[in-house]
Length: 99
Length: 516
Image (cartoon, rainbow over all chains, first blue to last red):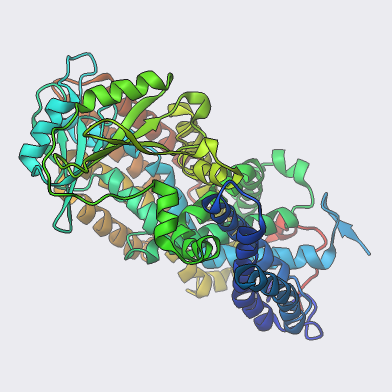
């Protein structure tokens, strides 16, 4: 019987639990950070227009980010894939909202 | 390093994409099937409202009462002080639909546009029920809505990984080996064909569905970012300033003349519905929703708020005159529900929606077939794949058959739509564990569904003394659908041979590493 475990690299590059948690938790947080970034910085007709665009980008970015994180070689690398862009977007979001 | 397919992906990436695609599919297939199949039926809610409620059917040639006269009847029946949402009559939707809001309740009635007779909408029709199944799976709001939105995200991920696993896209477009006795091969080809041909439709449905479903979840965050958390400011930007009732009585303008005036000012448009607030108060207003000209229907959302006292414009919302974000957002609903292209677009969506549902079902069947024990004696054993297979059969076949039975109940015994649907689904779900063969159950279920459709269409043709053209068309459509379902059921073989010997032919990527 064919058995597949989201782990084609075997024990060497395992950590699929880490990858899934990074994709679900980290991917969600990163998608929201990207959505807020677009809302703040994308030039639009007015605030409502920007909010709509931010929301649309959030929903489309969400599955792409989660997949990108799942394709990492290990759980640790998956978290790195999330945390580096998240830190960047968080800094830009906070800067745009409060400075 | 060997690279595969038109995307030139690495072997490991294709292999991982295949695993993710499989697991996403098996975890979400049942909910996705329910959502996609009920969505395919929900497309026709507007067209079937009057069909299911014969008392609201309208003869389009008859001389009708004015909107003002009908509103007077509605106010006498529902209460003059209540705010009302009104959908103007069409040949398909039946009489004028009025929803009155007050005391935390919503009352709904239909008014015959020729006589003004009031028809109570006491029960949900089958198509209204199925629409709710699609929009929130009949779960408490807003959680059901969010869950459906997450299913859109799930489907998007599944489609992306599905594309990544395709190493022979052109071949997959045309290869269908119909081997009734080697079902896994047929399921595999069918899954790939449906996936590739319906790919664009799948992406559009999944992304628009995710946006519509998750709107309530992301909107507060976006409003917080765009308006500094000022919800009132965001609401005002969307629908204009809100006025409370003053308590002073005022003379109202004619709603008919306001509709005529607006339609005259914007050629090619038609008012489809309106909202009345604070009737006979100085702050009384009407929000007229325009059904736009065909070339502008792709972006919905043109509303004119006018004062009912002096006819002045209070606010005008038109997505087509705003930025890219609003235009895209305004296109979500028309694109998701095929509101832009009339009945032809809805029929195309229906076919593609059923194909998407079938793609989901065949994907689950491949997963189960791959995991069936190879030896004949082991296959007789009721292992994990047996139970999963029967759950899948019970849910999917049960939904199809119980939807047809609910439609029959909606036409023949309206109070029993909900009970019929849930009882039939539960009975079929339980029965699926006791049938000797899934294929026999599928065949029988298909023929039974066709029989129910023929019975309900025949009943309508025979029981209705006067049949407007719109209702007659629905009956003909149901009979045609019954014929198609019966023909598809006849193609299902009564039994399948062991398909393990064709295992290698149905792999999605020929270079997948063998698991240890």
